[in-house]
Image (cartoon, rainbow, N blue to C red; front, side, top):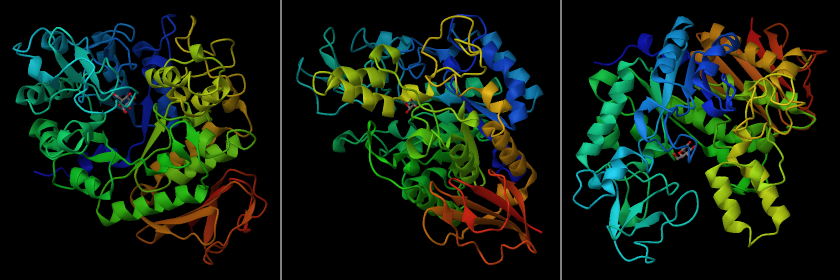
Length: 540
Ligand code: GLC
């Protein structure tokens, strides 16, 4: 039975990602926690969000900040208890906020009970839950490297075997070819579905089926079968499931296609890859490339009737405005222009914590100010190979810690309302200038603009469901139309330099009115646009 659109709550939702460790501490231990999240629900409601994607809060040794899970059915004590989690579900529900959890099923922690058993002997019932190769110490089964640096194989002398880890050495990959593993994973999904979770963001989901024959770790031959087993079951078909997948056009169609019973959507990362040659090295780009990617995916998802996720930031990337915009003298203009440019398109907005008040990258000079396992490994691997200053520049540019630093809620020094103790990771280096309290009271308030954008979205079926049409003429700008049953909204965004835009000829005061702009406008329809100016027009 297919679900009517009525039940697909996500079709008109705005989702907000919380990175629990850095969101709000309630007990002074310097680490954000679940009661802290509960205390901020009213703030989120006022912002205009409908659902939370909660990065992992399961029991975990925190080698990769919770993406290394040692018990999927329990809560990490630093975040709270199962009772706290149930209270979060209840308090969120009272406010009409849905909860999506992060589902990390490609790997577990090496401290998970299954792995502790698996390591005991080759004939242990859990041994085959993981991926092993016989071998000789120092002679790796193949030359595959882990995403976080170094070989993807770790030697276990007691067994005379290597285990495979796509990520850190403390994150052994599960062997999805084992039907018992698949059953355990279904049980985990059901456990949280029974507790009332509304959806899942599925961590590196395309890695669960591996293609060792071709040394290819994602999109393996059994991916669709596995995902269907996980989410195609009647009991869980109602969940909003979004995959983190390295998907191109073809694989998106196959994993998210209607009636496939696999995923509702995936994150598409093409725009995130712009402007760099690798994670730590910038490369030339133009904002028009961001526009081109958005146009491509708006058209593609419309053509194939797929849901597109609209996002700029998450916990794995430096801030978007810092890397692909201007976080200095045009921070307000850039943050608001990009918010309108993404969140007025067709799709489902995902906002990352802090983005709504223009948070930006930090600058720190020593490796002790960083925590991320990927960053620290990169530093260690390169500190004898590269000049120190250059390496520190690279890390400041690309580290995932940029977006993982605690939220600066207030002006209050030194911990800005995040904690009464010592933060687990240094506060953002620009917290004096960039904090929620300062932004809220500023004349040019980023959160004020976000609220307007989200409220407009909420009130407008044209923005939620209308067709998309690219009307851009010329360079360095993006002009698009949204239309439903003759009702129209036109959004015009200028990029970094002052520019005279070729606006559509229909855009006159007789036909349209200006709904929203991030500058004080003198003439609503003048072609001259200031740096990062955005205007949103509505057809009368
Ligand atoms: C995903 C997560 C990232 C994590 C990795 C391994 O990419 O977003 O934070 O380190 O998977 O679980």
